[in-house]
Image (cartoon, rainbow, N blue to C red; front, side, top):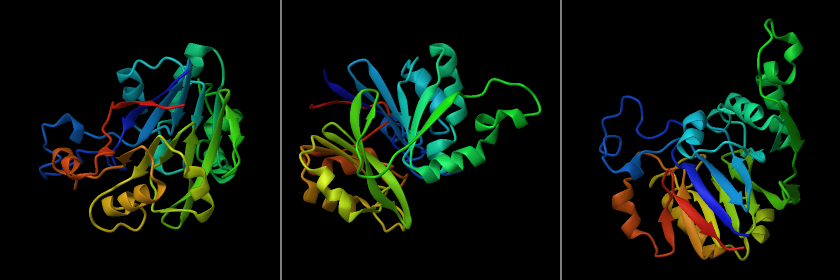
Length: 260
C-alpha cells in the first residue's frame, strides 16, 4: 500500500490571483501561480482523507473527481480552512452515510456554534438537507486511528493561536504555521515529506517566511519538502530554481507519491 498526497490548494486566505490586484503574479500565465485556498487530499490504498474544507472545496472535488471521503481533518477554524463545510453534504448523499470529522475540541465547539443549522437542525425554520457529520475530538501528540490509519495531530502555532498539523505515515502537513511547538519536534523525525507554510519573503505575524521555512526544513531534514500557503508576492518560476534541490514549491493539483 502506498500514500499519495494531492495539493488541492496552495494559496493564502484570499487565494491567488487576488480580487482587484494588478501585480505580475496575479496576472501570471503560469498555472502554478493560480492558487486556491489551502488544503490537501491524502490517499492510502482505497482510503481518502481530506485536510480542511476550504471555500473552494466544490470545484476542488469536481476537478479531481472525488466522489467519496473516509474522513475530514481540520487544522483550525479560520474561514479559509472551514467554510466549504456545507459541501460535505454531497458526500453524505453519494455514500448514503455520515462523515467522520476530526478536530480539536475548541474547533468542534466553534463548528457547533457557527453552523448551528447542521448540528442542531431542530431549530431550522425549514426542513432541508444538511451535512451529517460525526465529530471526533483529537489531542495534539496523541495518535488516533482514522480510516484505519494511525495519524498524529501535531501542535503548531499560527501566531498566538495554537492549531494543528498532522503526521500521516512518513508525511507531516503543517500549513498556517509560524512556529513549531517544542513538544512537536520529536514527531518530525524520519520524514519522507514535510509540507510547511512558506507565505512570502518578508515577516508576517502568523506565517513563516520562505527563509524561516527553510530553517525548519534544515533542522527536520526530511527527504523532501514542499512550501504551501503561498502569497502573490511569490512567483513560482522565480523562486523554485533558487530553492535547495530537495525543496519545492507546491502548486495546485500537484500529486506526490510518499514512502511508507
